[in-house]
Every structure is written in structure tokens, then in C-alpha cells.
Length: 121
Image 1 (spheres, rainbow, N blue to C red):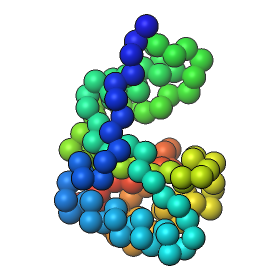
Image 2: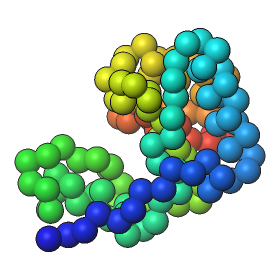
Image 3: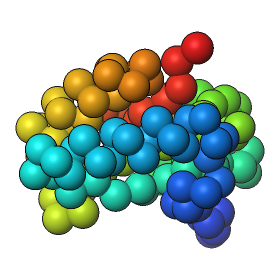
Image 4: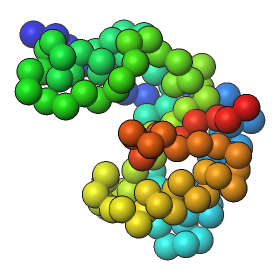
């Protein structure tokens, strides 16, 4: 059995200029009545490999969690996964607002992963 590497969700692990943008995104989301929380910040290569394997090797018949074999922006603190505290991944209005607020901070949200906000630039 493959053990899942620990997920990190501390905003302090993000690259400081990006963390400042994320904090402003969270504040704007709260002002709009949403409840953002950090699901994952800094990610190791071991965790990336584990997540890549879901749906491919060690969790057959599940959809892929990540599309990249190697850790990129999550590995250097320039990406964060954000979800709703109450509804998790099940709130389309939340993710539309997250995308709008990310754009205001010159960040992007991946089309294939609506919770993933990353540094643009």
C-alpha cells in the first residue's frame, strides 16, 4: 500500500509576494460573502508523484488529481489550492468569484482545476 505524503496548507509557506496576493484574494472573497480556506500550498515532489499516480497506478478507476509528473509552481510556493470551508469543491459561484478575484491580483486559475490559483508573471 502506498502512503499519501502529507499535504501542507500553511500560507506562510508561499513565496511572500504571492502570499500577499492570496491574502488580498481571500479578503475580497470574504467581502463577497464566500468562505475561502487553503487546501494546499507548498508541495514536495513525493506528494506530486503520489497525486499523479491517483487514477493511473495506485488508485485504479479514479480520475487524475494532477496532470503533471513534476511539481512546478506548487513546489516553489507560487501556487495554492483554495476551496470553500463549508462546501469544499461543490460551489460553482465560489469558483467563479475566485477566478475573478485572482484576475484582479494578476494571478491565474487553471481551467482544468478551478481551485488552483497561481502566480502569473
